[in-house]
Length: 356
Ligand code: MRU
Image (cartoon, protein in one colour):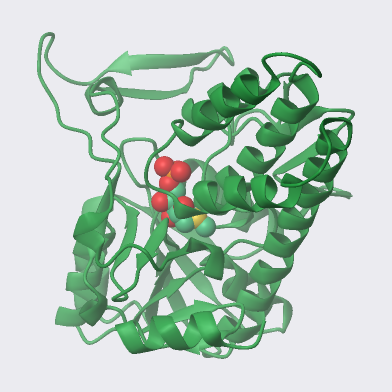
């Protein structure tokens, strides 16, 4: 996507270095973080320098490429690769795209002699990232049909191009509709505690010239009840075989509010987010992050320094689940690169069998 006069991807690889937009500094500073080793890449995923299910997947694929590059050619190679694979796999537990990407690269390398493995892994990782970008572009093509001219779209967290390699999932239909000349307005939930909506969604929509207003997380019901929202679109970190959707904490309550107010609630995803082995949303491991994220707020002060400030009593305890489960029956449809599908066991199976 375009920032100023240049097209960017969220994550890519150059000379064995996994390069990525440093998302923790946005919207204040635009910097590129260079992950030189696979340990750096693992840390970048864990610390959310790169985040969003598809972007984590692509970063994981490049990280595994680094593992094959760094592994000794002789003794200990197999063990080194296994350790690197497990390190990357353990970075974040919820997004299916990470596991999908690691398997994708590992399968491509199978059967290759040791001296060819790094090259084969890189080719697979690049292919994975390119496919993700194309899938997201197609999500935009299909999803734009669902957005009427003049619509106000509510979205939660950041499921834009920063969360993917390019285009985004929930925001791809918005970009496609906007580029086609439809007048669209976006309400972006701020998405405490990490504020991906306020920091990232607002920033990337503004880069593209899409009108956006940030709302407090607890304001969504107000706007839905007043009839000010035409439709809701979110992304997802994992879709279970029964159509349940796991996404950023707070998604479930938006879906309940949308149902209560008769507003369609859509979920956009590349098919690499579907986990057919997972029977339902309650079987997914939900990441619980550091309580400090809830107890504090982070931003830039007037001198341009990033600061964390405490917004809770010293010694207070907090809970910080990063994701929740939205039952399939609250989801109007799944928007994928293969078309629009019902959020149900039947719809998920149909999507997985659909023409690629
Ligand atoms: O914790 P994050 O920022 O990685 O969570 C991101 C989300 O929950 C997104 O909505 C999801 O990954 C879909 S991204 C296209």
